[in-house]
Image: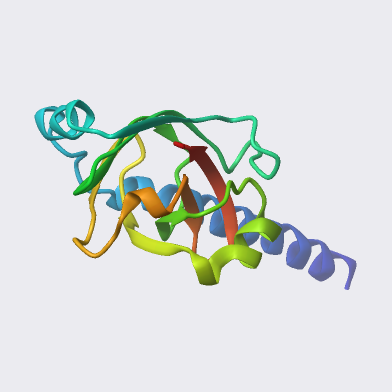
Length: 156
């Protein structure tokens, strides 16, 4: 009985560790290629606003963070830097600065979901023509599946 319990525990731990590593590694393995540098540079050159993702946000931690430069133009948002890899990242614009999950959930009804983030070293997300970037002041990366704050940048 002791041996069975020992095997059950060790195998259970191995499965749990493998599952956790799979959740972390899968987005990296299936990530598409980052957008062309020329396209990102074009958005950055035509940006009305720039801001910085920072690892020091209140709800960012060693698994959920971003660091780098965000450019906000009338028709697209681009990023050059690094995001912690993860599944189901979404990009939002918020009318108020957000750096916690609580703030995100409280303000979500007033935000606009811009699109999906599928790459972790740079990205470019087109903006719908109906989105007026002047009505917002913060770009947020959010993990939809796990309800996890990743990072934010206040651009105005």
